[in-house]
Amino acid sequence: MIDDLSTTEERRQVNYWHPAFRAALRLELEQYADALEIREEVPLNTEPLRIDALVIRKIQDVELKKNLATIFRKDNIVEFKGPSDYLSVDDFYKVYAYACLYSAITKGVTIKDVTITMIESSPPQALFTHLKKERKYDIIEKYPGIYYVEGDYLPIQIIATKELEEHENLWLSGIRANLGVEQGGLIARAFMARPKENDIETYFDIIMGANPEILTEVQKMKMSPAFREAFARTELGIEWHKENLDRAHQEDARRALALGLPVETVREITGLTTAAIQEMAKQ
Figure 1 (cartoon, rainbow, N blue to C red):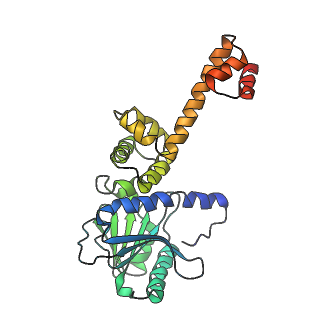
Figure 2: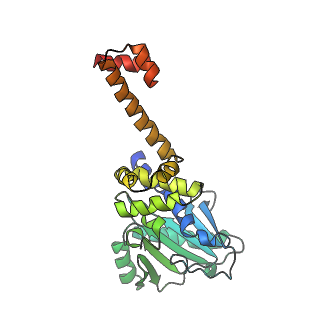
Figure 3: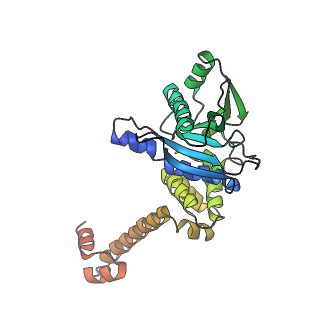
């Protein structure tokens, strides 16, 4: 993806969600792991032109029943826009150009092998209006949240993650910063039920990190001790545990100081540094 944003903060916000998207895409299509290969950040040439994800159909005779995959041919280009970004008219033509360039420079691939999938949070109404008025395309909602752009030689679909059904697309629909408690619970349960693997842990770290209030509510649900055990294995869980442990030690230190215990004794009890305890004693 060409990053033409002007500030570091804008780039950070746009790119923050991409690891979660890549993990979600793999999780959504995991039932076809033998038939599909997913490549990430695929360079098109020596210039910084990159496809967010490329889904390659390795086994042609496997029927893809997953709603987001029914459109797939052999080589499927996927463009992702996070919750802080949007899919513009220029983005549409950029990705369309990627598809044409990819088929032109990739050995063994022709344009008839290629499809385009564009993903963002909400339906891109300005883009839809442009495609209908200027290109005379039809926009058909094939499945909840999945819109087919009909009238072009290339199969094209646009996915609005906020409109996807949770039971069908739990992972993609969960990529947001305003996640509801119910869906957060579903994601947490799915997380607990799976073995340790990079995709699910990357996804969980990012989604719950963006929704800390949901994590607090989820922890109150009847998931312990299994949830605590599963959560503790993630980077987010390690950091969460460290912060809570530090907070508890600080409270213990304040109580011990209030009782008149010497600094050295408080250090042995809490494990805090002498400097930190001395600073608390001044307060």
